[in-house]
Length: 473
Ligand code: NBP
Image (cartoon, rainbow, N blue to C red; front, side, top):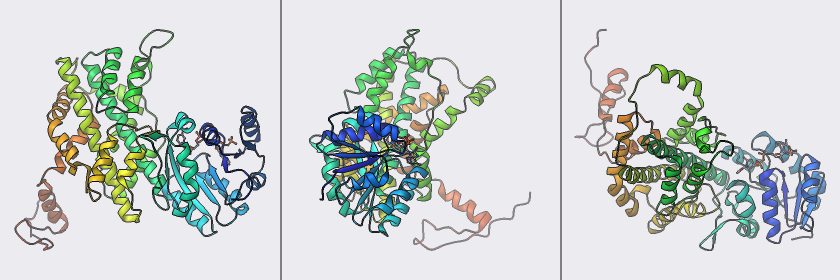
């Protein structure tokens, strides 16, 4: 490589600043640029003695970098990425690498990849998870793009990524938009995990557990098979008291959930590919319904349902809810992995599903002990058709499903909404049904639309049509 900074980063908001400090701390000299120049100056001034080169124009920034250049964008996803590329690309030379580390939609990344490739540039859409803390101390990184870029990015990414069992939480995901795509599904799975935890909380709360008692339950779960970052922060959030009143803070937080769109992107993509992601779907819809607070309050006054607390054995409930959460989580991951497998085949990405599970073990929001089991499942059988086909998960679901069913039944009987638990269980029961009522559905379709049907007593592919009786309204 030629003289100059080892790495360049554009966009010094919270993620960009923390990534720069992480990269610099690994021995790299980093040039930085931000549209608002004062931000650049303040950032460089706040970190004297570090190998940072502040620049005030894109030509100055580009000229400060060793070639082939490695330039990472950490600007707001969407139009800002195109705005920066429009100004940056004419300044670059063939072989330079541009990395978009924001939460871009994978199809946007594919469009940008094609445009930059036509100019001899290498474009890498890299999903980065872990928020501010991950960016500074070690995120999970999901870079896509041309394989030739990986050897040049590997030393930087492997040094800044989180590490689990000595392994960096980064790998080259695949060509084109594969990296941003996998980050999108990661976020969809994150939605599912969070909603499942909220449903567990709702059941325990209905049974009269205090916030502190629930914090203790989640803390206990975090020592077992459910060990994960999200369970850990749930325990801490439940234990947090409001400073002014001493009341558990969660009880004072308005029950209206926000969302930024990556969950919805996952649903749209799943629908386009006819893959069922019903747990993620339930999670996204639960956020939507939660946001309709005024409508829910009005409905709560006129629509009836069971009332009153759950009267159950508390210890038994904790064990049942634990298993319902675990089983539903397995189904949610099975669906997310099925979606990635489907897109991988469609796009020719050759996604390494076991490897992806392993780079999610550290740095990212869904980091969890049980991801090891997913990695092991694909290591044992690289052609595994579905997570539930792996012996560990098959036996797990067979073993704990009674508790799962008990929890869903209890919730339904008492009018406690558990959309993600319920959707996961319905998926499981559909998946294991050798015969579904779709025979009647086919009869209906043939009745009104002459769509034809196959028969169980005839070879596959032979289509029949019946002259159904006339309907007189
Ligand atoms: P933001 O998403 O808030 O973006 C702010 C940055 O974008 C600033 O540097 C701003 O420059 C720059 N920018 C904008 Br806005 N429009 C621009 C334009 N037209 N030209 C040039 N620069 C422009 O920052 P963030 O929260 O650090 O996130 C960065 C990316 O990382 C996003 O894609 C986000 O989705 C993703 N991400 C965020 C997190 C997180 O926890 N925050 C986690 C994982 C991924 P300015 O200073 O001049 O306004």
